[in-house]
Length: 499
Image (cartoon, rainbow, N blue to C red; front, side, top):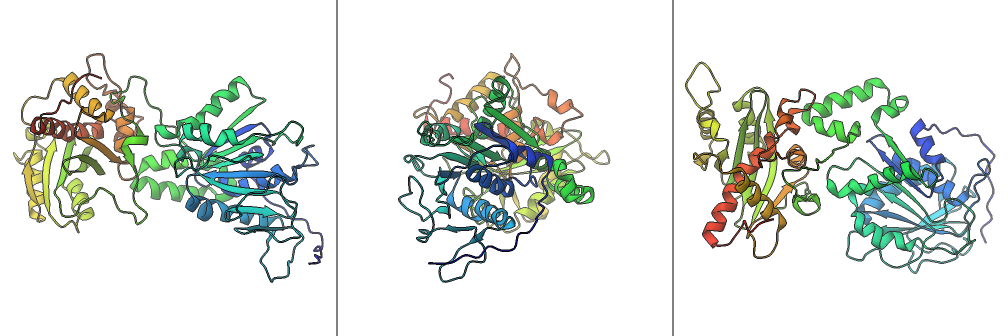
């Protein structure tokens, strides 16, 4: 038997921001915190765990000894490398120690992870079958890691509470059908308000897949005694980082991608209009991320790149695509407020290692008539072609110089393709959500007019970042529609049977 000697009592002060205190004190059955980067969500969740299982004498919250909870995330890699280390740091901050076999504990407050706890630990009322991914405490409480990265991967089991991390990256339907039903208990088992509770944290969702986290906000308005919704941006942590540090982040992030600052740091909510021009666009289906090594899964270094341009007095835009005969992949985006040469330079530098230096040119027909330099009579496309050729790229003109297609025809062709129904189209569309963040936002936020034209009021909105306006979505139309039509003619397949 191991004899534990309690350390001398000490007083340790831990600072919490107002939002962190609100999250810690919240005792509603469901609490959701949508917080920016730097909000301290993960670390604070570690302290929240102790409050859930240990209760609070000061607040009259009873403990839940020998309880079993679940820590839910997108993948085990996320949980074990991002969430768990910060939670362990929180436990260590209040005197907890991770017990390792063969060592003499220096604290009476122990936990173990990843293996069956020693015999002097208490046992949960309903022990897990496998302790491989379980955090265990001396009083018999345990927290099991649960992931939704496999079909039916979270089904089965019975748990007393749930802690859900980065909820916006989870499939809301799967959470409600697979995870929530596992919160099932017995009347009178615990008197704690945290019994069968859901504690959620997440950053602001970028796409429609994460919008389910805002269900808690709506429910909190209807039943405030049962639901709590908390939001925070980086300035809610001003007392932690200081104004100068936050300003430095703002300058550095905005220099590369202002939208990241607005969403990730300022917690700006991206709202999709009800009258969307692309109603069939679904981020769960059409958006994809980069691979673990940072590369694009659809990128082919030995195949041509498809460049599609849009021109505006305040912003030049180009998106980069590839087409393998089946998948149109929208892989990257570039913007410049000053010159086409600067815009093209960004592309050339980014794709310097591309093996087959061939581009297919798509875009707005107006670029053929537009003169970007009053000192010469060179069109926008001539300037683009000349610059790329000087940099060693072969340029094939794929621009449609015919009048723009009938609006309904283009609207229907693109949205029918997005449906991906068998027999309708032989083409599918995929968009890199990391490297085309503004483009995806533009596509999701573009409204439609009654005559099936785009509502382009965003291009005149002085308060809106122009990269979020409809320009980027237009570049996609130019290349998507041409490829959809060409593919349909070549294979003799319908692409406009009706929506």
